[in-house]
Image 1 (cartoon, rainbow, N blue to C red):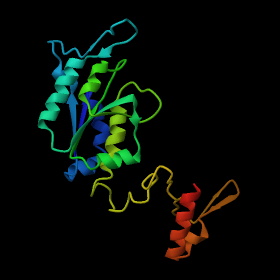
Image 2: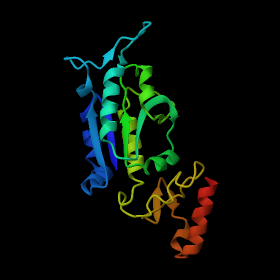
Image 3: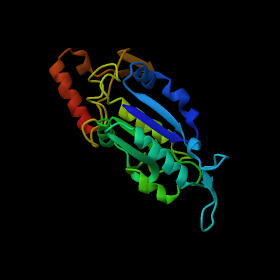
Length: 220
């Protein structure tokens, strides 16, 4: 699967996409992460991609022309199942269900904003708008990374175990929270208190463990 990250800061992703899961997924050719520099599509010799807002007000607005040209160029080269997503506070909420839907695509393009936002006409050239939460960031780059990782880890072969994502929080529905997990030591002592691993997990009875995990998930 291919992820296009349309931004004015194409190197802002360098560290994160070259570590851990995303690095391994790219090395195995399971995903391609393609930062795209919006300034390459500017319409003037100074590569200007923003301007003052009509009607007055603080800040700068990202211009529609370079965004349109960039999206058009990406669409002309894209694979069959492709979607262009504008990352914005007013978009629909990003959930695990949305991640699962995106994981069925061949290619996805994230449009990352900056400054005071986009010229509203940009929305005419994208497929949908998505928000990762009810708060405001300085740009869409962090949301793009959030969605990229959430989608990538659902693709076959990306995680170390083929069933690693099966019982995770939100993997079944928005009310599902994964059961609590424990590892060594069996007893952890702190400030005179013994914090123990639940005995059922030490029993070796896989059916009872399965039932315990199911009950703990539903209780949460």
